[in-house]
Image 1 (cartoon, one colour):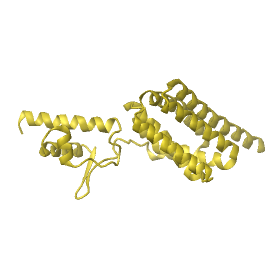
Image 2 (tube, rainbow, N blue to C red):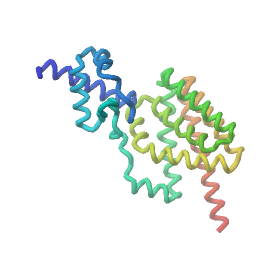
Image 3 (cartoon, helix red, strand yellow):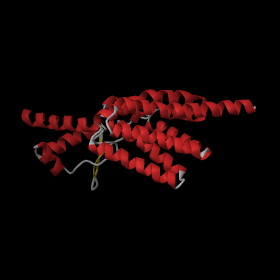
Image 4 (cartoon, one colour):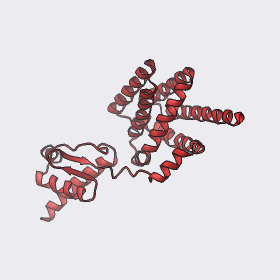
Length: 241
C-alpha cells in the first residue's frame, strides 16, 4: 500500500471514529454500504473496506457477512455487573444516583438547549408525544419507558462527546433506575403522575425553544421532585417500624 493510500485509509478511519464518538453512529447501528461511503468520502471502495477492517480489528465495528457492518457495543463500557447489582439491591443508594443524575442531566439539558438540531428536537417532541399517549392510556410501563428514552435523547442532543459517553457508559443502570422508579411513582398517585408529565413538558419545551438556563432549571426541578418523593417515602417506612 502506498503512502497516499495509507493516508486515505486513515482519513476515512478518523471520520468514522468521529461518527462513533459524537453518536452519529450509535451502538448497534448499521453502516451505509461501501459504495455509498466511498462516494461520501470521495475515495475508493477498497479504501473504505480497509478502514472498516482496521476498526473491526479494534473491536469498534462488527462485520456480519451478508448483513452488513455494525457498530459494536464496545464504546458502551457498562459498569461491572456486581456494582449494578449492588445498586439494585440497596435502595439507600438511590439518593446518590439521583444526586448524580441532577448534575449530569442538568448539564445535558443545558447544552441540548444550545445545540439541539432540528432532528434532535423532532426526536424529543416525538418521545414527549409517546409519553403523553401512554399517560392518557394509563399505561405506566410504556410511560416510564418513553421517559427513559427521552432522557437518552436529551443526552444525544447535548452534542458533547464526554457527556454522551459518560451517560451511555452507565445508561443500563440509569435506564433501569428511571423506568422502575417511574412506574412506582406513577402507580402510587395519579396526581404525581400528572406532575411528572408537566415537569417533562417543561424541560422538553425549554430545550426545543433554545433556552439553556430554563432547561437546566426545569431538569433540576424534576430530579429534586423525585428526590423529595423518595425521601418522604423512606421516612414514612421508617415511622411504620
